[in-house]
Image 1 (cartoon, rainbow, N blue to C red):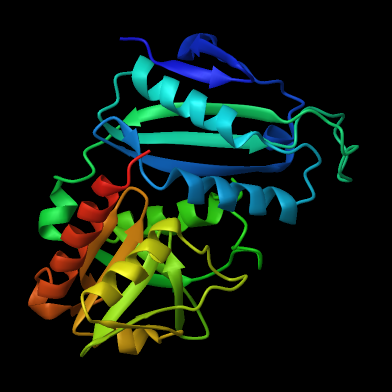
Image 2 (cartoon, rainbow, N blue to C red):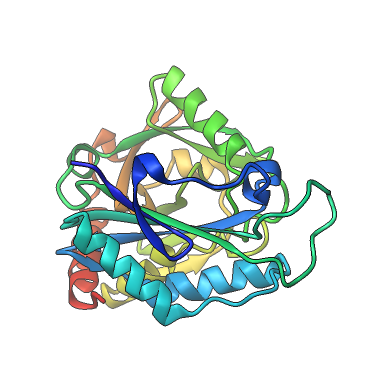
Length: 284
């Protein structure tokens, strides 16, 4: 079945979807994006994804604003047309079409807005039952990782390096401290304390990250946003990642060190179940 995608207000077959070669997303990676999960045919945490999108656009001085109601409408329509019961909607907003020039074009340049769906098993899947393994690599990205841009070449390099070494993902590090994963936030548990790096310009403040913090506190664990070292991670009681598609997924091995004897941690599993329950209760 042909997938229907959204391009600047139109719903078209994926084979017919086209964007100009002069679009700044194509020439400069001058675009931002969001990935919203879909459960039971409805959107997870859509409002917060839109708030982060608006922030990313503001940080990059995009001129036109978005209409959140309009965005909600086409997200829902894409989910319906493509019969997505479980999966994601990928949204991308670029600064638009302009003559190639490093300087930003005028603020009234029309945005390019595209979106498509992917069917994915988010709740029941192999990583949920087995966990994942990660390696650590140097973080060589730019210093505005808090803006969710499509500049993802280095995370792709890190992920590919991990796969070459038999791991599932990579945690990027600076000066011995863990920043985040290639497309997720990194967490460790020591005793009753949960640590994830504080949100600043060096990591993306994940929407799932924020939701999981609240869920963890409801489960009587203390969330302490602070940076932690690779050594601390390798010696953690439990470790996990969070993202819109991974939800809460256990990390069972970091480099050569097994976490929790290579098994999914009890608390991590409880946190995943609690997060999914909350997500199902707050669908849009």
